[in-house]
Length: 551
Image (cartoon, rainbow, N blue to C red; front, side, top):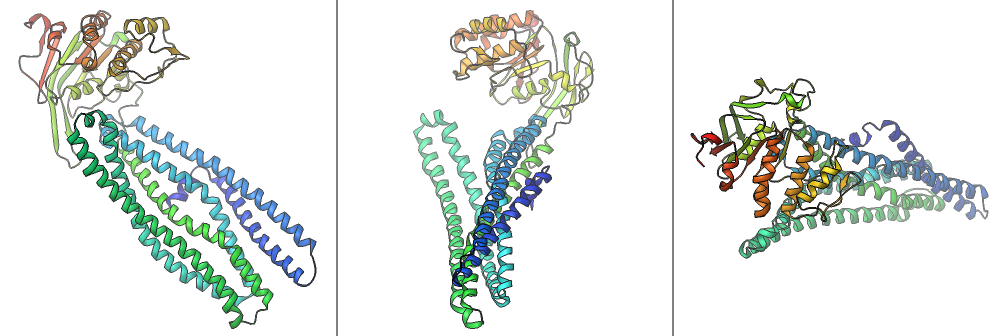
């Protein structure tokens, strides 16, 4: 079973101790009823047996200690299990290539991990209690068999009959659990639109009402219907178990004396054992739907891990090759480079290239063109985040391949349109704070954000302020290749002018290579080269150096 395989992975020793404690707890729980029955028999004989009382106290104390150990250790191991799961997924994400990760989707990764890890945690914590309950039931069966063979045979037959009915119910519940999980996932996906698209739907009432009335509410009704149907069946299963247990007790009290020669005290003892074991049996039975949910959760996690394994970027972590010194980078050349977006069905949705161009340190290159022309794709290719399906990238006439991709990327800083700001400079503890504070002033972010204990005090900024902070971070990182994907789009006119007329020329004068996609034609004359893309290809006559282009 995937569940038990997962929770015991790399924890065989501690789980052996937990299981042992659970077994002891189950045995001592059984001894409690044995001692109570023994004491009850002695009272019936007109005696008060101190020995049973002491054994009862010892059993309760031992049960408490064993159960406490199993429970606390399970919490520790379960917490470590979830943390290890997050770290393992983080490591796989860390090693994935960009295009494959985009196909999976960052939201999909987070949702699967956060939702399913809670289910796994809940199930893992119940594991030792279920184990103790199983031992308790086995102990009770042995105890009853000692009192009466016919009683245990008939009770086992009752259990088999009840189990057949219960598992028939569970078979239907399993289908409903799967359906409920699917419909709830669809509902959450639809609900996400109203949160992430708040501004867009706020300004469009028709879209807002359609989304809410015809999609969110509709999908919520489906999810609610499936959820209620599943929970109803779980309630029915629970009530069946309770009612069936009452029937076993009734059988013990009313019918067993009629078909056996048992003494009244023996009947009472058997009834007491059956009644006392009710809690354990209920715990076992009620854990089965949770284990079903957990199996679904683990399958979902395993599918995610398989997807991330398939997305493993084999070129990203080969730590060898040249390009280690800043002076190594002089010229980048794209030689008939091509890239294709391929759908899951194997169809080519878009083709970039073949692209042939050069870029040198100290140059400012603008990549222009309509939306969907391939600007962002070209920037990702140049940055080494996408791999060309044909052609090659060369640095100083040397082909960039698996042996030096890692060093090539280390020379690049890129700000995407959907960039993410980190609260600190990961991988760099030696920040020039004087330069940082000078840049905060230059970017007019002083007073809005500070840098304390090696991290920014807040990232709660406007869209334009976040882009200015991203530019600051890029400057501090001091990479040789700076790639900006429509970075000026959310800047106000004053800072847009500053970006094009002051910031970029300063970087160029420092020997940086700047490649930026943009739509601001009034600043095209500031570029050394303008690369004009249309439908994934450079338009003839538009890839021109500054000195030969009419401004």
